[in-house]
Amino acid sequence: MMKPYDIYPNRIIAHLEIDEHMRQISYPPEEIQERTIEILNQNGTSVGHRVGYFHIPFCEKLCKFCVFYRVKKDDAQLARFLDALIENLNWLSEYPYVSSVPFEAIYLGGGTPTTITPSQMHRLTSTIKACLPLSPNVEFTSESTFANITDEMLQALQEGGVNRMSLGVQTFSPRLRKLIGRECTPDDVIEKIGKVRRIMEVVNLDLIYNFPTQTIKEWEEDLKIATETGVDGISVHPLIPAEDSALTKMIQQGVIEPMGDTSKQYDFHCIAHNMLPERRYHPINLAHFSNNPKERILYLRLRLEEGDCFPFGAGGVGNFYDLVILNHKNIEHYITSIRDKQFPAEVAAPLPEPIKFLWALLGQLQQMKVEKEHFRKNYSIDLDEKYSELIDDLESKGLIKNHPEYFILTPLGLFWVFNICSEFLYHY
Image (cartoon, rainbow, N blue to C red; front, side):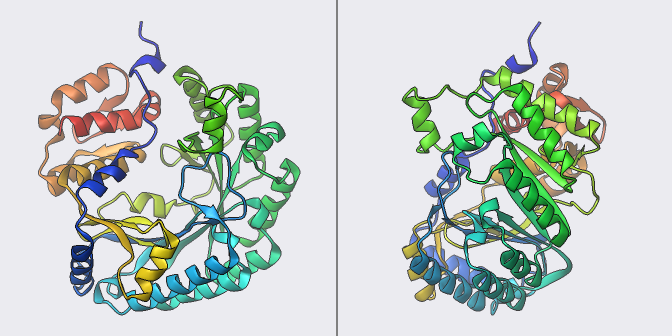
């Protein structure tokens, strides 16, 4: 009998290949400007949901594993970057496409957004509120490491309208925190979680599993401590180390053991999906668990639905109208583009129908339920007709439960969700 961790040869844990595909079909630089300005001059009231993502690519210290674009903090460069970002916000706000639809969620990510000073944070959040139409119940999130949490920063965030924080714990294990280059002790982390909870309406903790040498006991202890903090949400993710990261090089050089194989990933996954509900944290999507209805993960949900995710900042990724946008990663190029009154996109590609379908499907799969009528109405695709053999196969493997108007992921399907999504795209 096939074991649950052997259903596919390899587990896909992210669709990182989309980035390279978008580069291949991007408009040339001069057309990027023409196309973006053409769209921005339109009225945007026909679009669906709208969110904004701000990428602040600076970090005080570079972690050994991070897959996201980031650079070591340089105070002078950061100040010039922030000036450019605020200038970008000011002139974008004058276009009807931006000003005509409210933003339902704002997300400050990175990098480490709280690596800027409290006064810089106040300036940034004030500009966001002045330039972007925000919905009355906007979800306004900032990420942070624990080293950057101070009373002054929390006050600046609160006064700036931030009502949700996502804190990168990764692990409470002193041994593993040292391995990945995290400086705060577990006791410091727990103390600062309490401090943030007293200020913020919603607090989420990010945990990562499958670090090299991580044990099952350490993972169970991470989950136990996280639930005992009483936070509103806990997210669990498999480790995805960057190819050029210090951690990857340490593994390649034999300095530390490799990460666990698929069977160990499956063990970590099952422990989280069993243990968190037992502690009254119930799944609200494939990686997030909550004990409070105020934890809506609105940004994460809406950015995969039909609508806009405006990217701001160097390395920011998003989409609006029919374009996928990747802002300049090079910070100096980003700054120069804005000073020249150019949209700071390195890549702007027309959103192909298969990728639109993939995002919509992934959005629903992440919510663990796929509504078939949605795809009949928005994509003229009858899933039962087009994918009948695939749906039967997925059900026979115990990955989904099929119903006339929808199908839901099983606990096993949650583990293989990106493989399932790839199967639909392959048969598109």
